[in-house]
Image 1 (tube, rainbow, N blue to C red):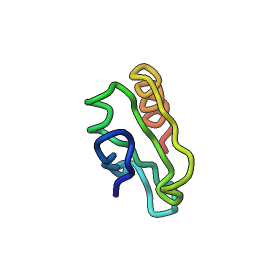
Image 2 (image 1 turned 180 degrees about the horizontal axis):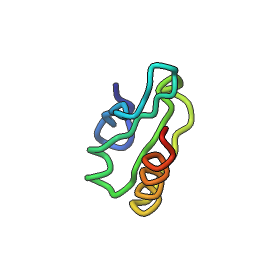
Image 3 (image 1 turned 120 degrees about the horizontal axis):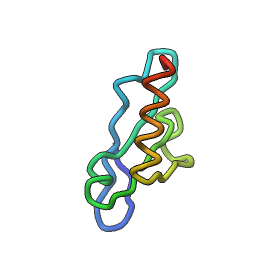
Image 4 (image 1 turned 90 degrees about the vertical axis):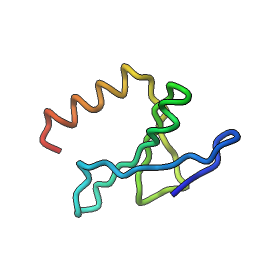
Length: 70
């Protein structure tokens, strides 16, 4: 999957924590490496809104997900 943001298409990856119940989160790792922006979206709505997170906010989101059992 990809969307165009700037000169390169954004490649989206589904979270390994996404379950079969429709709780699917995708992120763009190559975009994060290239820009320092961590893009997150709902896989059920790929053309809908997305979050743009800083590295610290991304780390906090991952920490909450790991510790909440989601």
